Image 1 (cartoon, helix red, strand yellow):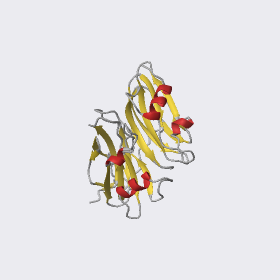
Image 2 (image 1 turned 90 degrees about the vertical axis):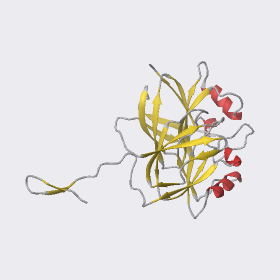
Image 3 (image 1 turned 60 degrees about the vertical axis):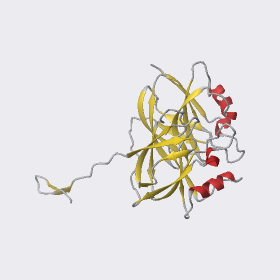
Image 4 (image 1 turned 90 degrees about the horizontal axis):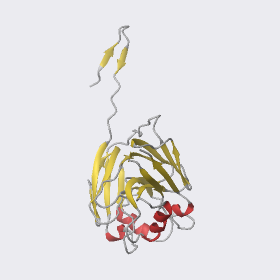
Length: 270
């Protein structure tokens, strides 16, 4: 039903519909599976990942074309060579410590089929998808024209080859920031809070083998997103020493982007 409002001069105006907030979905990760809906409606969805496993996990969403399924993407990722052209990295909440729930990450889902994956390597080096940690997600309904909200006063973070360009100051408190991939390769934003006395170099050294306890707490972030794509990340910052990292393998030499300098540290004061 359309509500019509009559102005004093007799002109006719249509009431603008109020913007709906994104739906919220909590995905539960265990070793090695996701508990999450099989279907969702198109539009903005705010995801949180609750890690009930004993290892680090993330929720990495990829949109699939050509009738492909999650198992097809898993097989393609296990083979040598570039990722398949029929898969587009869409983001989602990045890695979070066992026993913790990630920062909130909002993704605008379009109709079609998606793969939900965890490609973080386990203690033996094999990615979790090799242990069955993947799932199909079907997004239904008409295409969404919704856009992530823009707050002119909020920081934004551009992912480029190979840096995090932070526009604005990250202070203690809650920030809803737009994270956009402005580079030519897929990138991610993993946010870690360093333990007392630890440095970004300690974290980079640990990341080479991912053996033993990490020198930081992993809080979440934005899982791999394709060039030109964006997610909204809700940062909940307390005083401390933080690092943003990108672990995505480089298209040329296969080294993680952090090895090419894609590391950004910042300190949040009291």
